[in-house]
Amino acid sequence: MKRFLGKRKLVRIFISSEEKYDGQPLWEYLLKKAKEMEISGATVIKGVAGFGAHSEIMAFNVWSLSQKLPLIVEIVDTEEKITKFLRLANDWIEEAFVTMGDVEVIAYKHPKHGNP
Image (cartoon, rainbow, N blue to C red; front, top):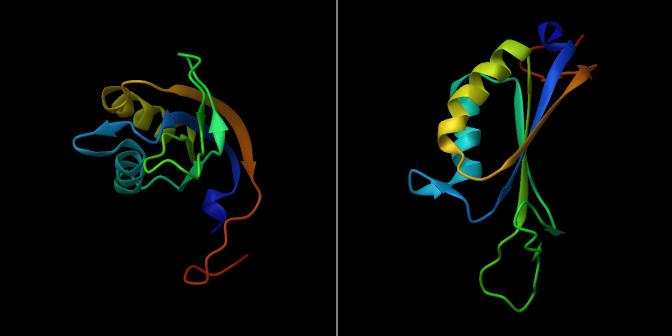
């Protein structure tokens, strides 16, 4: 769909897999809200290891029953939609590292909508 091509914003929200909002995993809540707001795209990426503001290393451990892992929620859309989403997300996120940068969408293909 050509309307999604061009200059866009990419937001990365770095959180822990243990973060929650309204009784559910924060990553899931963010994803659902992004979909409700008709954001062009969002992906949750699970990290193998990382650390944040507390300098606590979170890492995968095969012997541990519960895993506290770093997650990245990536969201792509126009600056206007991203700004609106982040204003709302500020109330949902208790602890995170958030970055935003410019990206250029060069392809956005879906068989139901036809491909350029």
